[in-house]
Length: 149
Image (cartoon, rainbow, N blue to C red):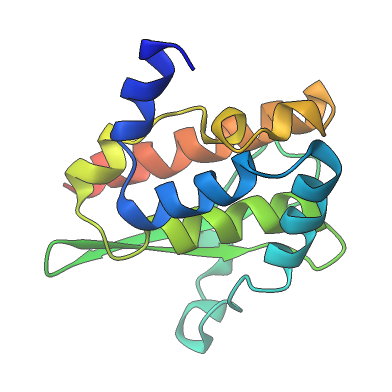
């Protein structure tokens, strides 16, 4: 692993780094299975946000309808996603990002690498079109955090 890649990983919050480590130990087929397992773990949109869905930001680069809402409370970021179950790839990636980034500080979110999908090895298992959507999702998350600071 080159030093640039190692430096990028050092910017990951601990929870996210643990997930990355798990994926890196797996072969590409297993990574896809892990991603699909994570898709089942994406929390439902809280009831209080159901009425706000129309004001949630849509990630247009994703093939599926992906909506994002971000909040900062007591110095901790919380991401909420509305993604249909019929879109397991992006649901799984969103679930990974939620598991790895919810509850950390805005500075930690902004310092996290933009290419988490590469650190997870998903570039070896997914098409470039799907990867563009995953890359865009992280960009939207960071932009929302910057706008809330």
